[in-house]
Image 1 (cartoon, rainbow, N blue to C red):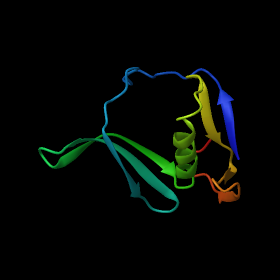
Image 2: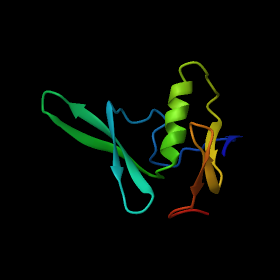
Image 3: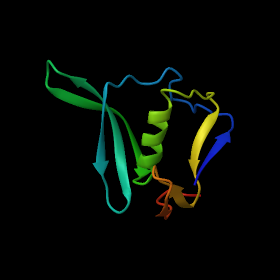
Length: 107
């Protein structure tokens, strides 16, 4: 299941509140059930891309991201709403449950 949690979100030193520009992304498989989301700046003139941010996630979290991106076109939430995956499982787009084992860095 995915829980909606409303809480303050902090920006640690060195993280810009204005974000980092990206115009492309890729999903890079990693060992086990993890993958990287690379956000990039792509130049068609130079025919190359540069990674500006990399995030490691559990592969099943991709379904949550996909679902949220689809719904954001019709539903807006506040800046303090987080989408949190509960330990043990995650809800799929079809409403089923996918087993989930926490990866590196879990509390």
